[in-house]
Image 1 (cartoon, rainbow, N blue to C red):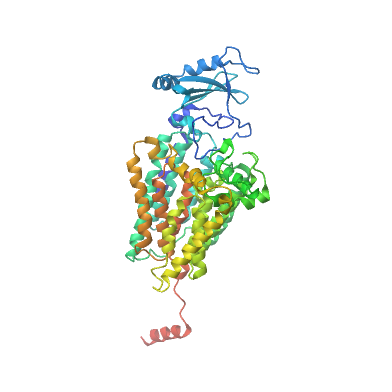
Image 2 (image 1 turned 30 degrees about the vertical axis):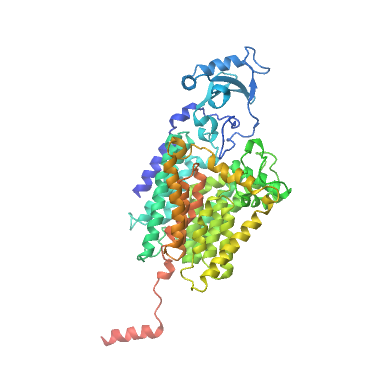
Amino acid sequence: MPGLLILLAALALALATPGPAAAAKTAGAPAAAVKAPTGTHAHSARPASSATTTEGPIPVPASGVPPAGRRLSANQVLAIAAALPKMRAVRAEYRGSYGGAYLKGPFRWQVSYFSRGGKKEIGQVTIDDISGRVLEQWSGFQVAWTMARGYPGAFGRHVNAWYVWLPLCVLFVLPFINFRRPFSLLHLDLLVLLLFSVSLAFFNHANIYASVPLAYPPLLYLLARMLALLRGGRRHARAPGPLRLLIPAPWLAIGVVFLIGFRVGLNVTDGNVIDVGYAGVIGAKRVLNGGRLYGSYPTNNEHGDTYGPVNYEAYVPFQAIFGGGATWDDVPAAHAAAVFFDLLAVALLFLLGRRMRGPTLGIALAYAWVAYPFTLFALESNSNDTLVAALVLAALLAASYRGAPATLARGAAAALAGLTKFAPLALAPLLATHGLREASRRHRPRDLALFVAAFAAAAAVACIPALSHDSLHTIYERTIAYQANRGSPFSVWGLYGGLGDVQLAVEIAAVLLALVLAVVPRPADLVGLAAACAAVVIAAQLGIEHWFYLYIPWFFPLVMLALLGRFNDPASQRPAAASEPARSSLHAAAVSS
């Protein structure tokens, strides 16, 4: 398959070649990511060598005398940093800037440059105390955003290695290759889903000016593809036939079991916990102890309370069983929760596929999840993003049934997904109106009322731990207001600036799309619902200020449901065996002719 070979070659080149910014750091990442005085972090992670202290840098006054246990003095490291061309350029841009020396761990120094009045940190240099060698030098947004520095293993650890990532890419597309139709659109769809890997490779090499724009072409393609499926469904286009797998479904099921074992083993032995998972554990401890859910988070995760209450409540059983969470290095509950969320998503995909087209589709969807490298990326980072996907899938599974209990379950799942991370709230209109067009006029108001009642009841119960200690104003300020007002270089809006009007237009378009798809005629089956939900989620992600690869699992299972759910179950395509009278008639006809 030429397209796959080209993509793998591009990925290998991107994974092996460091970006321009990577020259600013050496292979030895710092012992701990230091939070910049003026920086904010939407996601942060402990680098691979995170066993050492996480304390911030200790200021040292200017002096020619080395501190106790040090070889270099503050004046010497200030002189080393001042001689760097990058720092000279930064200081020339900010007149009146000044520098300060800090102790950073047992064997390193940090020199930070600040704008006039100390309002903004504009440059940062890390120097080895023994050799006097410059280990890192950063300017621009990479000063405040340590996650933009490409520290090895900061997110997902060894899943980013080419010998893990590239085989997963091959395994992901292999069962769905149809050599009889090499130019099948499904092949292109799968390659586009892998195209995010090129952007990630540049991110891992600290080349944000390449990684950020490269994330948008696949997002735009997938949005257009989902909308095209909805349009084709309204025209009652001919079904593409049975789902033909290169690898038989029983063997694919064995592959699912093997890959699950690989993923869980890698999480236990190699996975790291980013701030998102740590925040879930902190919140769970507060729920268990009857404390306030929002405000006064630890300084190393001060904005960990930016998520909905369901996010923290979901970690409660794992915190109660596994404990820990006193420090960032002691969060077994975060690992257990991430593994459970992942297995739940696999199970829900199998059940959805089985209900839609039979066991073959269920196995294919489960395999797609466990083979897709970005779902492993989320699992290895021990984030909460798979929980979002699982709750949305639960809402879709409830939508596959009819009756009042199913409607209630759909409404409750929609509320829980929206109160985990707030973006899935955009799916509420779609999920509320699903099936109304097919229902009788007498039942439509009842079905809609049941959904709204279940949504409101689930939301109210989920908010009890938060509202017991915090006001709505506090919760709003710590969550939605903070997320709406923070800056981030991880989108074209934040990276380039000056695009506020365009960003607002994209955000309005996403809202309108969610409302329009909820009311206009669309395919009434789960394929149509999955495609519509995927389109809304992707449209919402296009307009946000902070986009990251952990958000791909939000829409990935919906996209796969829409792409593979169009195909019929191969078992249903087999011609039925002729009955005995029919065979006798055929034989008689042959003799008489």
